Amino acid sequence: MANFITIDRIRRSRDGSSGDAANDLPLYMAAGEQKQKQKGGGEGGGEGGDSEGGQKMAEKGEDLKEEMDNLLDEIDTVLEENAEEFVKNYVQRGGE
Amino acid sequence: MQKRIYGIETEFGIIFTPEGRKTLPVEKAIRFLFEKLITTEHFLNVFLENGARFYQDTGCHPEYATPECISPSQLTIYDRAGERILEDLQIYAEEKIREERIPGKLSIFKNNTDFVGNSYGCHENYLVDRDVDFYYLAEQLIPFLVTRQIYTGAGKVFQTQDGIHYCVSQRAQHIYQKISGTTTNDRSIINTRDEPHADREKYRRLHVIVGDSNMSEYTNFIKVGTASVVLQMIEDNYINKDFTLRNPVKAIKDITYDATCKRKLRLDNGREYSPIEIQREYCEMAQKYIEQYPVTEDHKKAVHMWQHVLDCLDTDPNKLDRQIDWVIKRKLIQSWVDKHETTWDDPRVLMLDLQYHDIRRERSLFYLMERKGAVERLFTDEQVDAAKATPPPDTRAKMRGEFIKLARENSIQYDLDWSNIRLGNLLNVRVICNNPFETDTEKVAELVRTIQKTNLRKTSLSKLVIQS
Image (cartoon, rainbow over all chains, first blue to last red):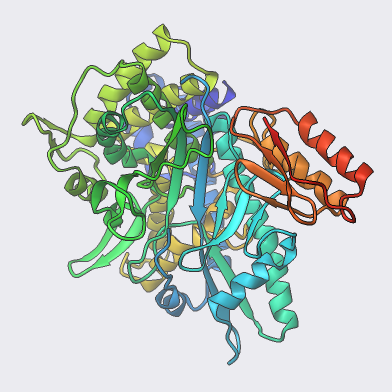
């Protein structure tokens, strides 16, 4: 059942419904999306975020942006260098 | 059937990229993959100690068929174990190729399409009762299978004359029939291949070939888990609504081009439903069903997740950017495009799409995200590692896997298929197991002991058949 707790936690934290949940935010979330969630709340009782929670969320938003930037930087380090050529050469025979 | 056997066959894409002038045709590259797996079985077709089969398929694809599994959870773990087994073989093969002085990179992808529009598959297998009318079952399943891509699709960037499209599914473009007997031409949603690898009087095999190969454990689990619940509801005659689509083959293509998942489809009775609405109907029936009928924990878990993903798809699909492959990948590409201030036309976008599916973890974008905690996991690396070397404890695969281990340790010649074990230097001793739920490994151990005593390697026994 742990999985469902995770899902609910993520959903709650995205909806900005609780300040505490902000500590458990998923790493992979664009800061833009985060800000939008703070303004609008969301479905599932998202109206309850207090201003202190909002402050925390904003700080967390910055952290998340950093996480996201790090992830994208790492993607650039592993992404195939000759991308265009590689993709064009990627021809398989039909299978099955 | 409450107790069911599940299996997935995955065909992988493979390419060798030379770093110098010397190159290596794929026929040769694939041989290096198998080099580490030398047994007395046929070359390019072997069974593994975890009970799975690994072989070269039509079109020179490496193919991994999971062992017989008893639940969607177990199947998800064994499917991923196949990626790890193949990754080990790929690392070994790349090293061997280097020793042959052909510098380059061997890449293997768990996806379903190449650059020019060829497709290779991911086939789900479900053991079903022979009593159930196959065409009734298929007709009932088709609307479900056509619309489930909204939470099972692996996503695909398509270049067309009108520009770039992001499709929900890799496979949808390559389906031309509702039901058919072939898999290479006229690919269908359900294939009629009926090889139960079990007692034909009792069982048949349902061979679903419309699905995408999944990287995300969550997506893979929900794909098999929901199908399993729907199957059971059909077997119990629980489905009392008719969602027959007027044109299911057209619908499957329309859905894949509609990332909102809300465009209406026409049913045979003239009504119109969106893919989300059709899935909701099935899901609501399943919610009631699991309250009334005996079901497994996996079924309950799958139905709970099903409701969650449909709620998210209804409000904002981006909420599934940690769970569902097509959403995870779309979010990844969009963030990358934003960072580089470029557009989806950028040729590197196609590479991002492809590299998401690389099975070599240090190169794979999916696995990079997983390491960063950016995608949700249902299982652990320990569970997957264990499944590389040991068979599922509750199906016939246990007998096969343990036999292979014993035979290798004792240098006994053998040959296998799903329901037969042949051994001895003339392969004249045979164990038949037509019951996929059978786990009695004592029979196999006894046989090996007999062989050791009589030293079968020197004297050949008269033909001995053990039926289980």
